[in-house]
Image 1 (tube, rainbow, N blue to C red):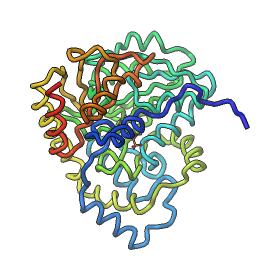
Image 2 (cartoon, protein in one colour):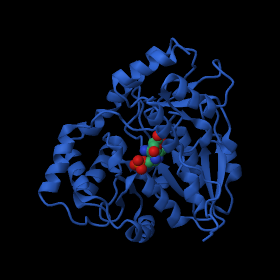
Image 3 (cartoon, protein in one colour):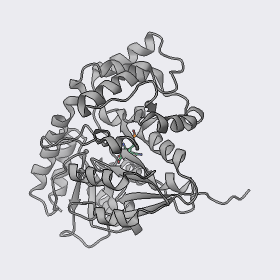
Length: 380
Ligand code: PMP
Ligand code: GLN
């Protein structure tokens, strides 16, 4: 049987490729974004308790009532705005499903979607499978700032969606208030939907504040705000996330969600909902990761890599242009095979695979792993 591929140019995700190589060569894995340490035992106990006390059948299709309420309370506490948990919050199979379903709900053949590159690697295929057209705007090292004049030029009657991601994977930069106001201004009086990928909302350093799209009223009225509870609570393998959007947008989202997912793993939802009753559990996350970032960067000061400290996410870009001319993929592979440290080459996230000679390192790792990795990297 032969068939025409619907995604002829899509390659295996870089996260599977680099973690695969890290495993094959026994390298320290600072590539894929996940912690190599356990989450909080209290959370595991709550999920177990939920399972043992009967939360084992289908949850409500928008998500368990308890979890939607916990999300509503968190958003109110952090961003001083409210979503109706009955109609405006949906729990999803990780942020990835929220992203895919949002795009599939709104993007039709020929619709244009503005994507800032480097971009998380699920955005473009999710647009293309729906026959939409990604319109890429390349951001450049070291500050990866958005030129809003350029965005203005690219908006036209076919523009259906703009995807933003702050804190930004892989650059570790954040959108400022001025950025958010510019986006709000440019989309005012249009039908553009904003997909705001905020999976690293709790990983913000140096006393900066994460600015959610829901804090800006006109932006909120057109946005899906997407987050990842797997990322937030150190359990990426649980694949649990959520999105918030105004009712008229969520009504459309749920039409697709109900027939692709229906509802998400119930005991995990219940356990996380109980865990979120104590806001400290998410309020303490920045300090935890800032210490790890600083541990990693203090050691890297003595290396030939150049860097601007990550402002958010648990990723740090390291510029290796003083070490070698190799392209980033070749260098990342050699780092694994010859030196035993795995990272992510960032060209795969760029327009036309632009090679900016920066690798992404994940510092959500034990102190031992980070110290061992820096010992190797500082010798290069
Ligand atoms: N968006 C970004 C920017 C990410 O880095 C990730 C990876 N966590 C996701 C979305 C997907 O999150 P999840 O694992 O919850 O599907
Ligand atoms: N978000 C994670 C990263 O950026 C990986 C997610 C995945 O492997 N799909 O590393």
